[in-house]
Image (cartoon, rainbow, N blue to C red; front, side, top):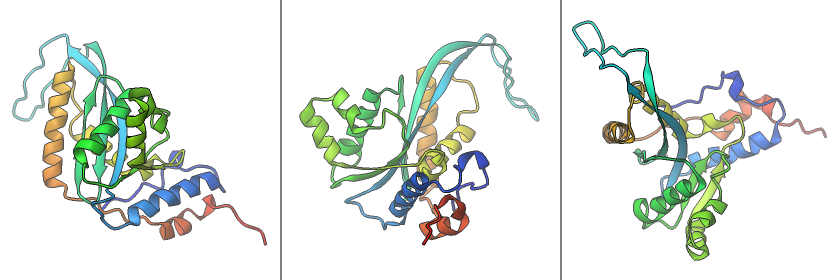
Length: 231
């Protein structure tokens, strides 16, 4: 069972925020819809990862002692991790890219449409408001005919500002960070291999996501966020 951490004050906007509740209820409505392979529900998020190399060989682990790293390291640039998850199917994929530009996002969408869900009529995509997460990004990457073909396959649902906890993909990214990214990666290949192993193991173990926070709950627990309508 996954429950959003509503007590994180920095994740909750000021009182009476109509924009927040409108987008929140839109996303919660998506999560309440039953599984439909013709219209898969997919949540998408991303995060940068710093690549760092060792200046000295780490000491191997020993009984009662974990592997030891020197405090000095060499910066080898950054990489980007995209993560999408289909909560009702318990399926996730974690592509690693060198950048996270609009074009990178567009190619991720093309893969979702043509490789991951080729038989779907469309994809209901939950994502945040990053400026690259726009239909315009498709036109920056592909000819207009291809961009429009892909756009017709998408039903976009944006989480509100200060509402990233509504994106199930962010919860998956948190698990990835704790379980896989707690060590240093000196190059792109090492990071990609570790992430691929985590993805395979998690897909085998985590069968689905049980989201239990619905619109009715929001209207009670987050009542102060709703504008008060005067008669």
